[in-house]
Length: 111
Image 1 (spheres, one colour):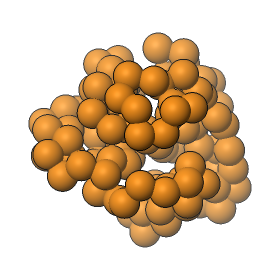
Image 2 (tube, rainbow, N blue to C red):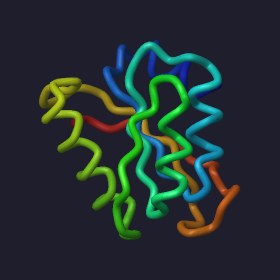
Image 3 (cartoon, helix red, strand yellow):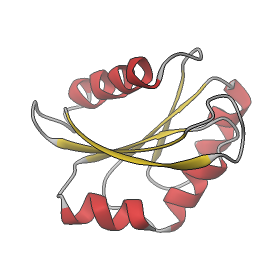
């Protein structure tokens, strides 16, 4: 819930969720955010499962660094006109990349 409150307080137009299993993204969707949640996952099945959750926009991308995946999400946000340069973006991820169930990081960045 901390991410939803942070995104609302900052008036962030988009949340980015890096997920392996999709459980983090579904947890974000549980709180019915008013902004789109770009869900980056390396697994096609996870992306398909995320399509049924409200506000989630799943994207399949190969595993990479957190910064590279964030760049992909920001490009999508700009393309879809959810973001403008300089907008705050809330990102939810885990420190142990590639390990399901390790979501423990909230980052706030500028687009």
